[in-house]
Length: 207
Ligand code: GAR
Image (cartoon, rainbow, N blue to C red; front, side, top):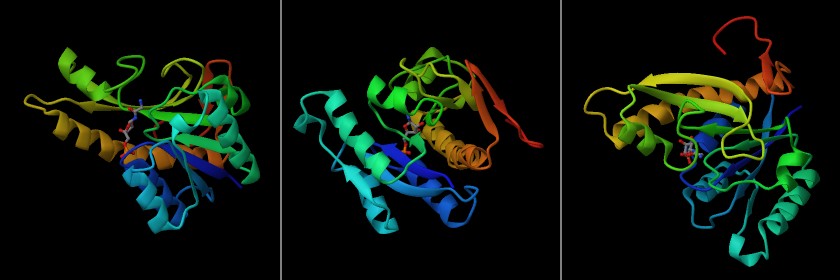
């Protein structure tokens, strides 16, 4: 069975959606073993408490390097036999300590249609640029910034008069559906990675 760790830094609406999906069996039997959070004051920490999900909460300033806290995270993941790492609004670039160890088992959700608008504030970038379509991408994590192999994407139209609040709400609505679905594909063994090529061997529905 899949044992998942969710990494988050903020609000945690994706974390919440994943936890709820796990509880209703919509994650294909996968369970949330751990929340990893780099911001002790983040709302997601309270959500984990309410849901009874164990959390490893740390302050990066207490460590000499990124590698140092990532080594600590890896220890926790191994203790709990985590086999899928799910980044959900985790606002830090990972080092090879995590990327190499969990390659092919480490995914991220990003609020744009990659490779457009990588990095911070993808929603603001898309609105400033003036694109009429943006969306959501779920991808494997590699050493780069939002550059890993793409697993699934959903397009969302940007209507005229769109604000960052309204578009961000639309993005979150799509994310709440898409991320649990993609995690359930992993749990069912549908996802294969070969170099940059991702195959999702699903019999029906959109990838
Ligand atoms: C989500 O929209 C996610 O796509 C984005 O942060 C938000 C977290 O929301 N991630 C990134 O921008 C990663 N570069 P949440 O805390 O409510 O799940």
